Length: 248
Image (cartoon, rainbow, N blue to C red; front, side, top):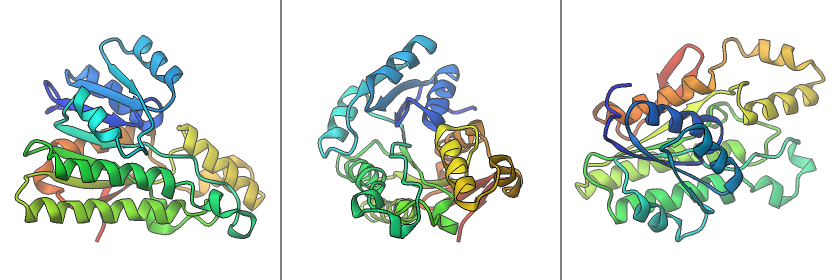
């Protein structure tokens, strides 16, 4: 993981899953890392397990979240993992509030932080990685607006890159779309939801996925994209167990 030593890294959604894995990796590799999440208890556990990591508890969907975060640590690398668990039911069984959960969290977080990165702006050469989902490519029929929200994050990375280029800011925006990771809490939730919906055992659903990526795979991919901005600017990448694939 060369390229992390001495870097300032902010991870939005850094207390669990892929975000936490990224935080731990950056700390091991000599980076200065700030983990941001809403709930305080997981952040306290993180600091116990990984001394030296800085934490900040706030709701990243709020408009004033970016200045509070950047006042604590101005990042060379900003990784946006924060979001909500989607619903686990077909369209006709959902309320609008349930359907829109990820628009009001994942998309809103990405919007506020991409906007702030452009307006502040972040230092030239900074990388901003939006962790989307493989659902953005293939859809996800029992998760409400989740797939559309994650697709919008991919569009936002492209839009923000175009603005950075137009304004000569020197920033790199990129989106990472991991397929279901059964070793994360979100992945386990998705596997349980789909196996219940399809009426098959969870292990059969996982078997139908081929070789899924792991949480560690996704963290490594996010860092890889962040430290090689010259070749990934404005692009989106799908992550499967076979590795990264650039999306058209």
